[in-house]
Image 1 (spheres, rainbow, N blue to C red):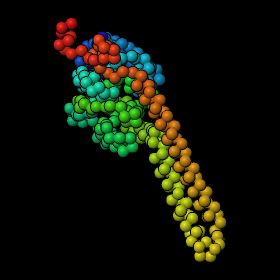
Image 2: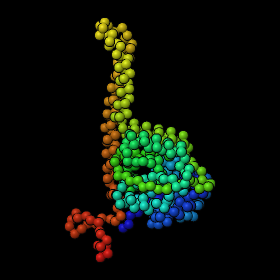
Image 3: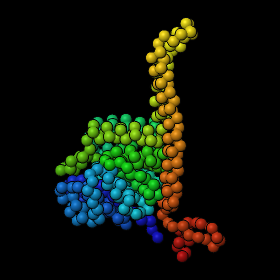
Image 4: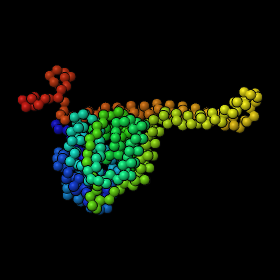
Length: 330
């Protein structure tokens, strides 16, 4: 049995581009099911996508993260590809990305963007992507160079272990951190990136969505690296306590008296808070490990992506993949 492949295309008012995206995906992956998830569009996105041969699904709660959450829950496939419906990514590379996923096997293949038209990647977005990707690489790992790419392929075990909590454009950040935290095998493939076609308008708001992504990174750091975050906070509090308390200690050594009781009490209270913050960080670290173990077990419940199903040999427990010669003889 051949592996099943599904393409998910989140869309909001992409009448000008969605038809070409669906046709390009169909040409690259003729065996795949192509789902266009309409996200409260007010133009002819649904009609154009249906005419191009896509399966239409709807998610009325606005936001790309809400669409991904719904699609990952509904769609069953051995390989699931997501691509934006604005025709900025080179959909003809879909076959290469899916093949790479199976050949690895990998749990995630990311299409890293390379401009094919000058100005396609706005300078503000490029700088923001580098800064945010650098922050994630520093906190979680160095396996990704284009964290905000919306062109990806996932294994079934990735999809079913991914919690999908984000609501809007920060969903790519959540995907990246999920793979880094569970140390899931990830590959990157360079894909072309061009400007939107005429009549298509970007829904990405540079500063607002950039702030949402940065806030998500900080929240993920607090949730996924609690010992690091709490150690930093406890260290700052301890430093304040030492600065306040040092003169009090010096006076006590010199005069055997404590003339500044309020300062001494304040320094002692801040140091106590620092200790409690540090302890809470280590407790949360234990809960984080438990949560990662649960996600890992869900991940392991599904087989690795592969081109051909495994078969049982003559001897019990002899699992092998049939060779081309064996297939031709059969």
